[in-house]
Image (cartoon, rainbow, N blue to C red; front, side, top):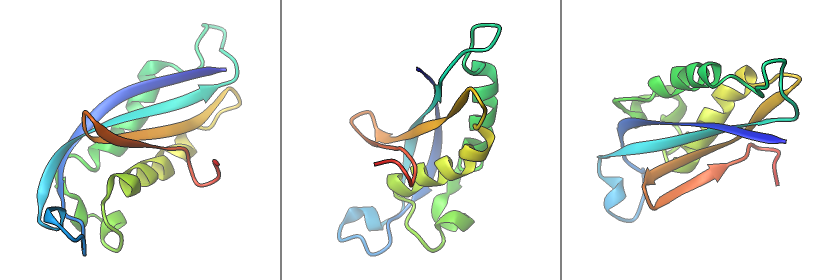
Length: 126
């Protein structure tokens, strides 16, 4: 098995509805995102997935979040744009484009800061 990843980031504003504290007020983050694809084998070039292709697919999804008030975007109008929901949203968007006989999307990591974040493995992972 090969775990192949890329890292990227995006800036955005949000607020957490009904949060009992300062995060209920609008504020921003420079979110860090790490997307990992798990490959069972490599192709004739020795790659599980080309980094260039992985970056292209991930950047399309992340660019839709960059420099927005996340609360105003359709995926977060009815659910809080928490790091957990951002990771799940990205996983949902990326999964169809990262399925191949050699590899599949393994997880999405989202960090609000260098010391706080989470890893989402999808709805079926336990």
